[in-house]
Length: 493
Ligand SMILES: [Ca+2]
Ligand SMILES: [Ca+2]
Image (tube, rainbow, N blue to C red):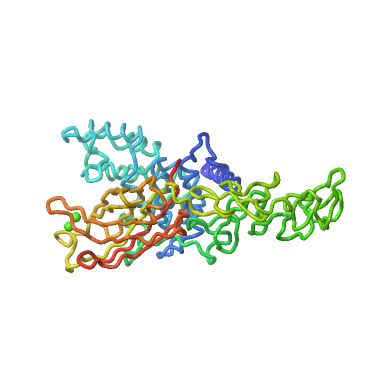
């Protein structure tokens, strides 16, 4: 029975992955397990092997679709977001999710039942049951799927002594439900993930392991620090090189954008995919342009009908599958009769070349930062050797135009993982002029402590959505050195 279920789940996973069906579910957005399967697969391809030598990342990735039976949709979505942000390790990201999962209907029913039967004297019990700082045991259940939670409710609430026996009973019930629903190796990895401390994604020395897509781990091509298969026209490449978007008439062949027949490989003209000499009246052309039949009295001369094939007529524009274009459109840009190029979001066509559109709108996404242990005066950030509670302020300005934004403040960490977008819809020219940030330690009684920050060196090549990193030195009068990981992304329209 267990085998049959696992086999079906793996079959679904294989279908979703191989066919690259967008969403692979009923709605437009990918289902949580489909997103998780995609991001965990990419992470496995681009991340260094886990430092502890565990094979759980691989096991959980292979069996990703079956996890939906034991983990809640919200847990899978959070884990997927974590992997997407560049943090390495499926197990590490599951560990990190456990305090941030939203309770489901079944979770709320369990809280009601626990509070009524096991803790009738606790004030505000239901509201506190899953709270992060609560002494009540709800956190234990948060990552799990509804059937697991329902089993815990049935087994562990409703008796007089259930308050003192609840944690032991819930732990046992979770273990047996998970073991019954998925293969034993998967169950072990799930329980490992949720028994660890919330230090996910950080190595023994506190540094974050970040996905680095390189030739060493990516046989396809790298985009946005992720390994793509490299065989599609939208992401073409091999041996870890940057993915290329093949222009309209090009296709991706052996990891390279090739016009099946084009000026790159044909000195005559192209009859569909076939290169021919190009000197005949009914197949006339040169330099890899599409062959033309020279109509009526027109003749083929040196590969050109007198009134010209596309390439001959198109010296100031570009050639697309439908002929000569002016070459000045954003989605059909080019000159000298070359292939027209779609410049993509945030770019414009200038003199036949794609350039950054300085008026286009972009977002500043902050993934995470690394902060030293001690302040400039060599003191711990908070009392009793406490770690800081870092938030980031972002500023952009150009003349009188300014934008600013602020992240949340994760508690007690030298590696705040924000995955937030403090600035949205800011002009490219503004980011190029001045994009800066400050990191502060949030304090409750004292004024907040300044940690560090600086102006980021933004150049036009940063406008591609890829993960960037920059280390600020200590300021002239205040602050310590901090390192920020961020992306400049095109704004949603
Ligand atoms: Ca402080
Ligand atoms: Ca603080």
